[in-house]
Image (tube, rainbow, N blue to C red; front, side, top):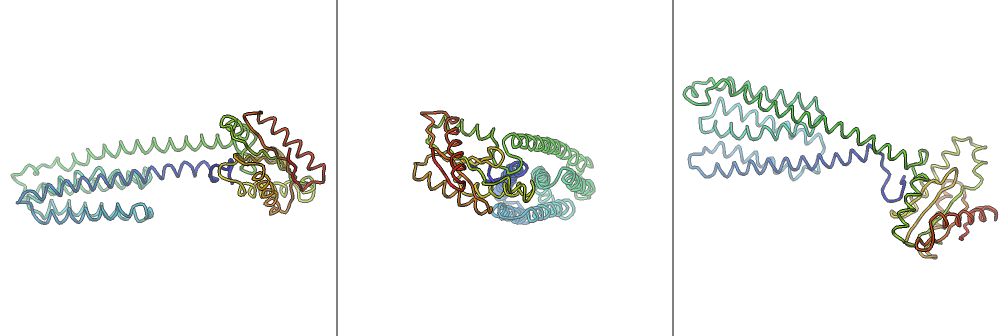
Length: 357
């Protein structure tokens, strides 16, 4: 339920996870855009020289097509689909890398080696975006070592005997260079996880300071802050105090556990009856506060009757004292005191009624 009426109910972990999920989606989309742009530039470069082999062009066209499809569907797919696509890309790159070293002519080999070296960093970052740190490190390292072993063995082929690619250090160098990238990304992931943990703790502390632990509504401290903010805005507001009738009898009959359940049901009903810009909070005990700005007397009366009506869904009634508060003319404490006097009159008059002051 809402603590202020200004946002839907969310716990601290949910708030942080939603923000991180948005950042991850943004990062994933940015990564795919980068890969598409890089591949498109490579494709344009391949179309210029006449001696470019058709196999390299076909491979890059297929690769770009896959990336464009993924980019279009990325936001509408699950993590499982995204990871499956990533594994497919890793496999395609591995096969193309292997073919470059063992089955292609020199022109194709150069093209495939350069294209793969460009793709490796973005693919490694994608691995870390979609997996936990240790899993991402394991997948990335295994894939890199496989590529390095292929290059190490492939460089010894006879076709490369007089070619710069005939160098056993190419494979280990590529692995070492990209392992450095993995370590850097790993550090970033660890820092991100520490940041998330600290953010969750901070939001939990804020919630603990501003929310009633039983109902999840705003507590008295948070209500004071909200009223102070309305003082600066200077909108005429309705201030209403609601007291559950015969609550002591409920506790005596059903125990404090039963009384707590009633409080939670009433809190939920009240939170669902106000506008997003309004506030409902627990003032203390069985008393609740509702603050609604920008209402005239007729609209305020409709709101009070609606609040009394929704309370009955919890199988109880409530006495209500309310008043209109103009921040330009008085403090909120004066309006609250007037509402409290009206509430006292409602209870003295037989309860289950609303009186304005």
